[in-house]
Length: 229
Image 1 (cartoon, rainbow, N blue to C red):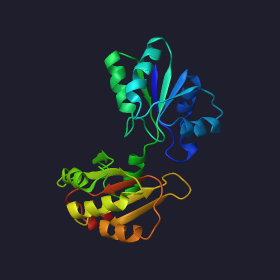
Image 2 (cartoon, rainbow, N blue to C red):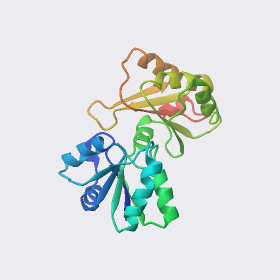
Image 3 (cartoon, one colour):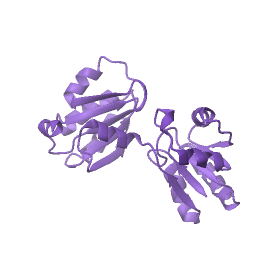
Image 4 (spheres, rainbow, N blue to C red):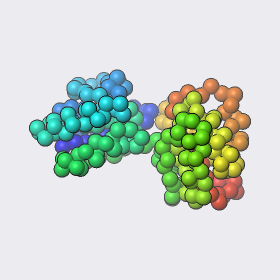
């Protein structure tokens, strides 16, 4: 069996009992970053061999994993944090396993995008997850333009190095919509900044940005008064 195992997005206490049982029971753990996963495994006293599986080696490692599975090995896939398959190589493993007829299942758990949209105060009954925007301004603006008329709440991941630039482009493309910026979710210094995008930019510009951010933006037609109710 191949297990996609969701792991904590910050607080190590957020892992499920079933996830721990799975990690203890498999023959091998495929990790986006073996050093990162080692911290989690050590915290819970789990000793299992790991293999690195990430965006830069997935084409080479994927056939190895599928061959190991065909030989009767059980494999758990984990990302650095959260649910595998969301902005990481999990998708390629799922697609390869399905094509090969391999047994596959999910051990559900934490997800930064779900946590952020709920805490944002913006509508969570319908939302569109867009992942990481392109790094360069031109492609990024075109990427944002595609959702200008989308009525659903929009969710993006962004690095601290490009968060302000992405917010500036979003403000230009969407107008001054309500939004929220989430950082260090589930950790000691968890922070959620809420307000119109112009307000968020004014607050965030003087600060030192660290870690990975989740940006939540109201859909087309959402107003500040809607945001407040």
